[in-house]
Amino acid sequence: MNYYLVESPLQFLNAREAKYRFCKDEKNVLIILRGASQKSMDQLKKLVDYSSWDTVYELPNTHKKVVLYKWQYDLESILKENYQKVNKVFIGEYRSLLMRNFVHKSNCEQSFLLDDGNVALFIHEKIITKEGLRHTLHPIRKALNWLFNFNDKDIWDINFFTFYNEWTRDSDVINDYSLLKSSLNTRIVDEGLVYFLGNNISEYGFIERKDYLSLLRKVIECFEGKTVYYLPHRREEPEGFQEIEDLGFQIKTIDEPIETYLVKQNKLPEIIASFLSTALDNCYALFSDHSVLYSFQYDLDILKSDRYKKTAKIIFNRYKKYEGFKTIEI
Image 1 (cartoon, rainbow, N blue to C red):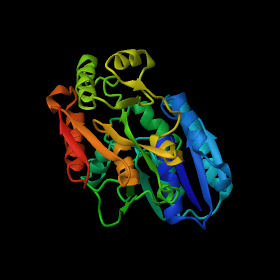
Image 2: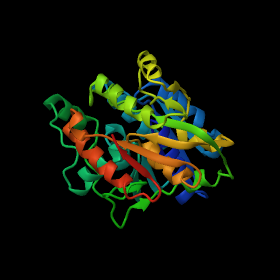
Image 3: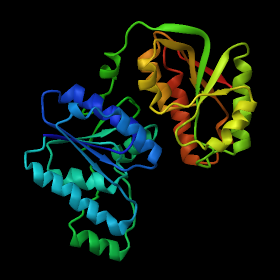
C-alpha cells in the first residue's frame, strides 16, 4: 500500500511519475488536499485519471489551526480504513503540518518528498543541514498537539524524488519524467513562435511591478519579428495582463501545466523562454530535442527578498550547465 498526498498540479504530476517509477503493480491511494487557490484545484482535478488509482480521496486543507485537528482525524481515519501495511508515502508539500503528521502516523517503510517548484531547493537544504522548519508553538497549540497526538516534527530520513541535484544524497532518486516522455511522439516545430512562461514574483512582492515590466520590455526586444505569447503563471492577476500586452506580447492562458499542454500538441514552439521557472526545467527535460530553451537572467539586486536572491542564483547557475540551453543577461 502506497499513499500520495498532493495539493497542486505539479505535485500531482510528480506523484504520477513516482507511481510509474516505483509502484505500478502495487496498491496506490491518492489523497488530494485543498491547496492555495481554487484555480490550482481545478487544474489538479482535470489531470487525475481516477481509474488509474485504487482509491482517490479529496479532503479540504485549511490554515485554521482550530480545524486542523479535524482534518488530522480524517487523514488518520483513511489509514485505519485501509488497515494495510504502508510501504511508501509520497508528500508534495513538506511545509504542510498535515502531510508531515501523516508520514509519522503511517509507520511507512519509506517516505518521499515530491518537487513543488523551486521551493524544493529551500526545503532540501533545510533537511540536509538538519536546520529543519523550526517554529515556536504557542502553549495552547502545544497542549492541543499533545491532546490529539499530532506530530508535525521534521522528517530527517525522508527521501527526495526530485528533478534537482543541488542537495541530493545517495538515497534520493532523480525524477527524469519517464512517464510524460513515454507520451511524446515526433513533434513539428512552429518556426517563429515563442512561448514565454510568466512569473508571479511581482504578486509575491519579490520585485516591484515596474521593474518586472521593464524586464519584459527587454525580453520582447530580443524577439523582434517573432510571435511571442506570454503564458501567465496561474497566480498572476489578470488585471495586469493589459500592461504586458502593451509591451508586444500576446496573452495565452491555459488551464493545465505547460508540460502536459505541450505533450498533447502536434506543434511545439521554436523557443520556450522565461526568467526562471520550474516549468523551464521540466520543458528542458521533455522538449529540448525540439525547442530551444532560453533563460533571461537579470541583476539579482533588483529583487527585494534575500532568500529569493539566493534561490535565483542557484537556478541561474544551473541553467548555464544545461547543454544547448541559452542564457541571456538583460
